[in-house]
Length: 198
Ligand code: IMP
Image 1 (tube, rainbow, N blue to C red):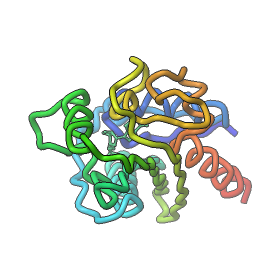
Image 2 (cartoon, rainbow, N blue to C red; image 1 turned 180 degrees about the horizontal axis):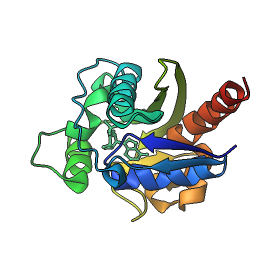
Image 3 (tube, rainbow, N blue to C red; image 1 turned 30 degrees about the vertical axis):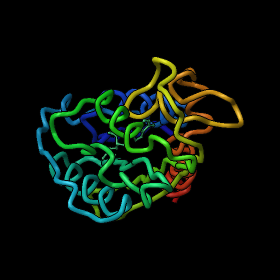
């Protein structure tokens, strides 16, 4: 299988992770930027799945190529599932990744219930109107302090008990093997392979 897809994301951390995983399945991806596409899709959905589909359909329409999008986020039990679909915007526009995870640590200060999970929804839209979807989830806890320099976003504070490390302390390969995005992309790649065989 060697097919070209647009990866509907402007997040370099995500593009790097997703292209590495998809390459293993023979899926070649280009970014909207490489195609000169500057459509900024507003994430107006209330679920990860809705937002992923909104992005995939918009970039497919703009590029005329099949488009893959993901929407993901961190759901913290003690915050009733938040920041959830608002993970990228948690704390408002002015914060960077470090500002967001510091805010999260401060919000959980004194909180002993630290369970959390990452969720990832993948959507793929084809120019003919067909769509594919897949989901992945990774359970963990919110650490009491940031650890590790790897990855992006909330990685330094997302602790995986079975490995006794945060996502930020894992190599890209170690993270992909257990992450929400790795699992969603593996499930998606299988669906895509079946679809392309038809
Ligand atoms: P979106 O999917 O681009 O709307 O944003 C998801 C947001 O959730 C990111 O900006 C990160 O803050 C967070 N996030 C999603 N996946 C990960 C991950 O693998 N590690 C760390 N943070 C993540």
